Image (cartoon, rainbow, N blue to C red):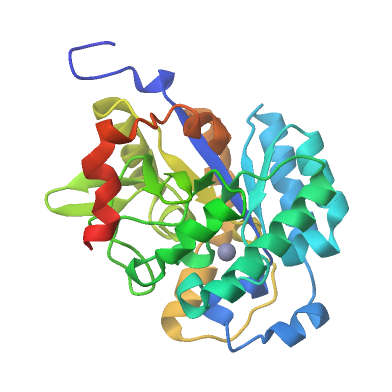
Length: 304
Ligand SMILES: [Zn+2]
């Protein structure tokens, strides 16, 4: 502690996470690249993920890799390499289908298949899951029960913001336990900082790439310093690949996907110099799971 109510931000350890998927898996290209064409596309995910592994190695940072089952099935040696380098392997589902577009039955099949493929390739247990495009919303809260039943201990799919495709704006901003009949799942939301009535995303993906770097730096520092809490940073391998083939999409989709791809690697290195990071599991194990102490927090998603 430096002054009352503030902590030394350099002491807070944030979570680093990568969603391992190829550029054509991204939801914005759903309908443009059908799943039946995925095998015909030029694959760049191995090279891009290996580059991230090099960068993390240079900065002595360990991360969590939420791997798409479809990718793990085709590139088991990549999954093995991630695990061998002491990073955490976790699941991004198999087919990159939005949770709220699936039935409970297809969702169960999807996450079961992904978990099994990733665990076989890595030789370690998968405890965490992140939905494509943070698609656990008020319409798909049933997914939390299925995640628990299929052996997951934490989820990172509920973003406490307003967005056209995802988010539960009233949900908790900081990691919290969700008590369900099947057990207690730890939810680790995408990070935001509070500004007036709004939760503003500050740590990853398009927000990191499209907005100037000072935004991320200010936001993470604010959460670390004012709240003394970790942020959850996320990025995709394709975000450091400016040479990826260009696919057609709407104007907004193209802006979100292609903006500043050539700047992201340098920004990531700067970020790794500016803050401390560890895998998600390190943050998860510090979340108190005493349900009575978190009654309000655990009930919030169901009131929505
Ligand atoms: Zn994804």
